[in-house]
Length: 263
Image (tube, rainbow, N blue to C red; front, top):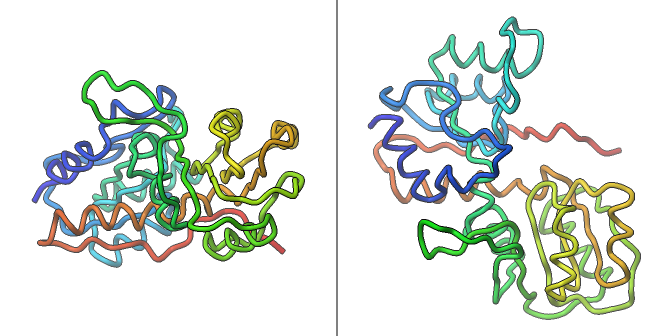
């Protein structure tokens, strides 16, 4: 089995053409013709991830975030990105990134959040036209809880279910929460879309100070943290891969790559 066989399957699930124009997706390091010894799936490709791949005899890392995002002008190990690239190349480890290609499919990053939260009657939050197929694509999802909750109950439910130590939220409105919008990663750009679709709450991350004013007393904004909002993405990828490939190891990385800590 070659790397190309794996990447072909991933690109059937989430075509690279679905990625946002600013993104850097696909096989970032490595040769498509290399025989696969094992695959490790992670949210971020860090030095510790490469070490884990080496220890577990995996020569392909499938990462959500791309380790190479902007251009590399030198490669001398002075930054964490350069050190990852050098270590991967020295140890013949390939790195493939999916990022917004996976964000833009219905059963992708935000779809997995809906599954974890048990949302039903889901639809895409910001649908996009897809010229190639009839498949609906786009960013974020919106759906309904099985039963409504008050705002405190809802935030406690999110805190437990999404395994987050901290939730930053907008003011309470005294309204029950039933319809919930979600978007993995940085999602301030979709606040207006959540309001337009009559969401009672919107879960995402990386909201700035002034973003909380955009709630406009229409819904509850909940910033649960970037890593926390995307943490189940690697589980999703392992689920997809283990259903398709059974003749080599598909390993879920056990390393937390969250760079943010709370006290």
